[in-house]
Image (cartoon, rainbow, N blue to C red; front, side, top):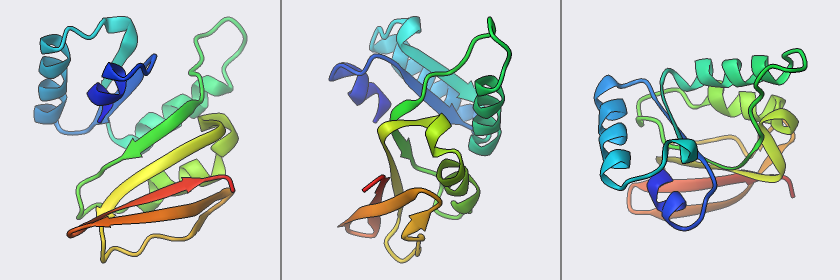
Length: 140
């Protein structure tokens, strides 16, 4: 999804994965597609740890590098994982992590119930495709 976003004009995409194999695959695909390094960030880390790092940067003293809030987040964990720690972080820290009209799109098994509300975020749409579903969270 991130490479597709870049091909359609996204200015920057962060890829976060805890799997060493997936990390290497993303890096290889980005190189193959000749995506410039300034357009991408590839991080080998748990998503919750990455978000904590971004939140720490947001409160860093002046002069230190800070992350810009995201317009769109696509969260696609393995189906067996617990979604709530990451989703609750977005709900609690929405103003720091997302732009005013930021959107979190979560891919999940259609039988995996996700909450309709995450702090200040609301699920605005669910799109089911076979066994998968996409839940869209934003500010109404």
